[in-house]
Image 1: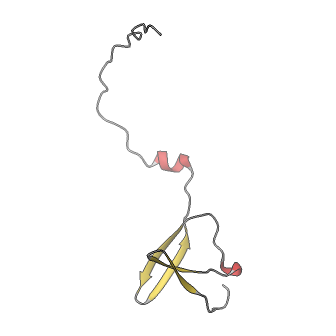
Image 2: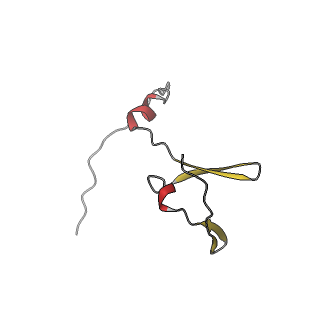
Image 3: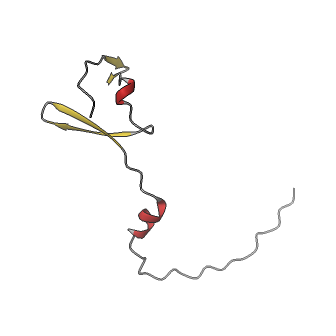
Length: 77
């Protein structure tokens, strides 16, 4: 882990923001932030592969109704 470093805080509209030095850059465009006492902890979001997300879903137990698939009505253009 890198050494601690002083950073700049600034306002971005109604939000407070921090400039992250290059050596502390996180991958991606989003991160997770949480507060632990007076500390802010910022971590990169771990992206799960779609396969893992789908594997975690429960199967649907109900039956889907039959829907008549009629051709569309003709339209006079």
